[in-house]
Image (cartoon, rainbow, N blue to C red; front, side, top):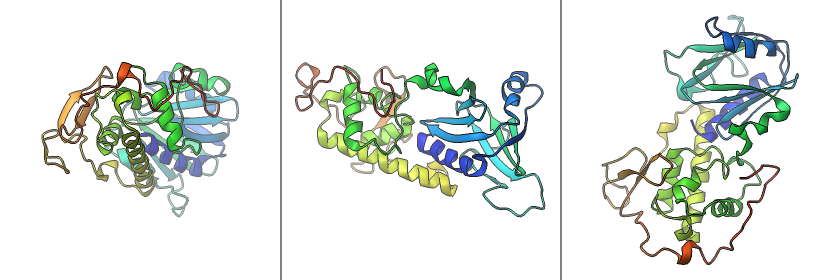
Length: 306
């Protein structure tokens, strides 16, 4: 699940449960640890539900937060406890239709004061942390901004990409969560294809027009994912030019799409060897002469950078 999808999910959850008091929390008896960690949030108010990257964050009135990550498949559903109550406000539906698969075990059921009920099924990573130290947790401390943040302009994004470049490949830098959080491997592959950039290319060899086209493609895909999630359409309906299409012809040049592990990120990259050829002449000393070298990584809007 990608960042824009979690962003849309947090929007819908906030509309349903934001500022509501939790009447009770039910957890399966065989998940004793979840019982201990979650049930003490019953009787408290949900102050805020939002996302950062692929993390779904809940803040409660007693200074405790949940940080939930879709490490495995998950599903959120909402309904009224009163079956005769007319459907409204998005209840009685799967609010995350992207993962509506049978066989997911319920993790918890949240009953709200207004009679609504939210159910989380599946096997996500769920952390219960003090709100004041939420962003000091190792998994959250270095998260960069998400694509929907207003201050993340194209120029700032490109600058951040180059700030952490070093000798890394463009694939590694795109997937660095401290630059921009919530970008999936699929989006990475589609970004690189749009910019006609080989996944193993060094950041210093990427031209300014290529970088701009890559960033613009990422924003277009993020907007499409967000809108599809709000409307209940699965992400696989969005066009895929290279991702998971190894051996199929490229839509531009008809060359066979390849899949390789590029760099040390351990992730597969799908690309067209003709449209995304690897640069033959690297930049002198690995430095892009049109970009000033920046020794320190600048924080943005209070978000720390490594």
